[in-house]
Image 1 (cartoon, rainbow, N blue to C red):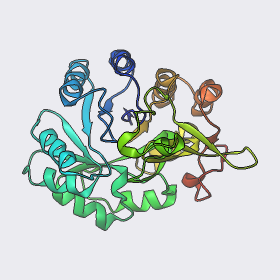
Image 2 (cartoon, rainbow, N blue to C red):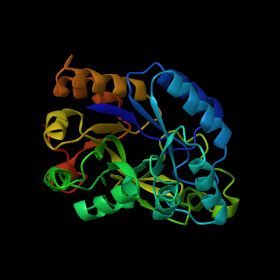
Image 3 (spheres, one colour):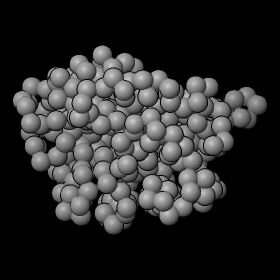
Amino acid sequence: MKLALGPILYYWPRHAVLDFYADVAAAPVDVVYLGETVCSRRHELRLPDWLEIATMLADAGKEAVLSTLPLVEAEADLRLVRKLAEHERFRIEANDMGAVRILGARGAGLPFVAGASLSVYSAQMLSLLANEGAMRWVSPPELSSATLADIVRAAPAGVETEVLAHGRLPLAYSARCFTARHHNLQKDACEYRCLGIADGLDLRTREGAPFLTINGTQTQSAGVYTLLAELPALAAAGVDVVRVSPQGDGTLDVLAAFRDAIDGRRTPEAAFASIAARLPGAPCNGFWHGRPGVEFVAA
């Protein structure tokens, strides 16, 4: 089973991003997803910067993948996808159907990754994407283990399955920026208020209980979805790649815990216990068990 690191979902300062990936180059991870996947107004790094990071990671033996936006709102967003498609050295993670169309037009031999925001809920949809060139798909996080196993059994030959196994759940995307709204600002004059917020803004109920996390145009779960202790069940369901989503602190420790569990140096339960105190929110895994996502079912 491969270990992947998803794209940074938050707006970290440039120096923090560069330092982070310098450390990732030496981390025990097989696949690294790069790029801006939340808001097109985030420009601490530009495409040449992401390509430079991708080259550095590839030289370190990682599979570097360039990710696209899940919500394409303007011609400028499409131009960026077209520019990504020109760089044939690196695979692309398509996060909206416009990107699928552009990448599918590149021709045979240039496969892409079908991102979770494409909402693949059936083997038929997966087959459609495979015909366009998808060589890997990332399952929507709300799929249960039983539904995922059914899709994997009927999946086209040679298509890998990837599952978000650790990180806050991306629940929804919107044209409205909730971080800007929090500061009583318009999206087009947001003053980049999300810059430097390492793990998003907590949203709580009137009673003070954690409810959601605000991350610009993205709404996330308050809890941290984690399937580290479920690695045997993931393998039994036919999962080829497990993804860790970066967090403001302790991501490298999470990657090390997953690698130890995958390689058998620690039990999945022991690996999870080693990082439980470092989570930026309460653990949850209900979706995997066919229950409300906010719940946590012990392995």
